[in-house]
Amino acid sequence: MAVASLKPRAWLLTFRSGSSKNEGEEIRLDLPEPVLALFEELPNPDCLLDGGTLPSVTTPPSHDCEIIFLPAGSATPFPLQKAAEGWIAEDPSGTGARQSVIEISFQGARVLRAVGKIVIVGDQDWPVRKGIAQFEWICKQLCRLEECIVNQWETSGEDATFFYLSRAGRSFQQRAGVTAAQTSAAKYWLIRAETLLDRSDLIAPPIARRVFLELCLRTEIAARMKAAERAVDAIHLLYEQAFMRLSEKREAGRSLLIEIFILLAILAEVALYVWELWF
Image (cartoon, rainbow, N blue to C red; front, side, top):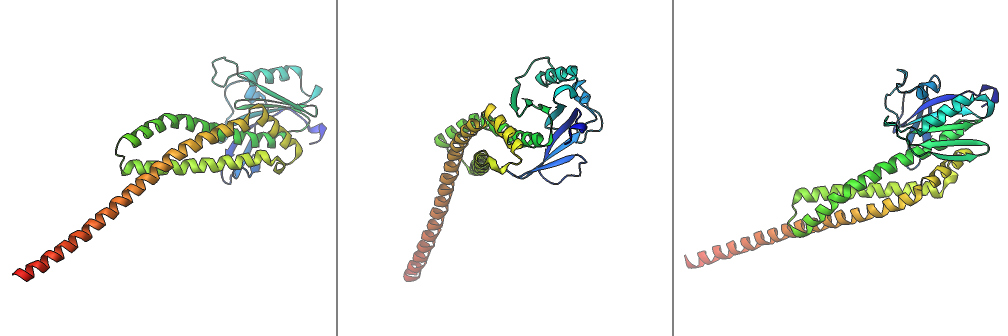
């Protein structure tokens, strides 16, 4: 981007799993899974800073992150810089609370990141936005997985007690199989996400890679993934064992039933033979 064309800008970032007819800019992300990051540009940063109501130009109405870009130095008025810094610290709930803000610096540029909000201060925006999109997608999916794990812990404890102390039936077996399959998919996603952390050279250009790695470091993404992986392994082990044991039990029941039918058939044949001998 030429220096002369720099101006304050704002976007809404939305993720889509497939193709999109959105008129905004698209960035394709391939890991941990293919997804499109859609940047819908707003008329100016005031659409976000002035509070509250986004213009009708936004489609779809829901979005994952709000981004403001401010040119570094005197190109951005000081009041606008202060307004952006105040905006990113505001909690999205609208209660007036303040939220934690992460700041990273590189090559004279700055990135401020809070939940659902980004402020970029520098001389270029596209490479930074690509790194941000990669990070926000990983962070979004990881937060969703962590929430599922928390919700699953209590259920898993109850299911373990139910399984070991009672006679679990077919419905429990089916639910155990579904949960085991879901945890297998979660484990696979975590492995692919960790691969991206280990092979960050897959992210280009270098500025995007730098932003991605810095944000991952400041939010302890790697440690959170390890913790999530251990939790997923524990949940998967419980439901896989339950499913396998119930399957073996049902198979043993079928085998026993077949053997009983065979024995009854043999006894019926013997009884018929004895009947013919005596009568």
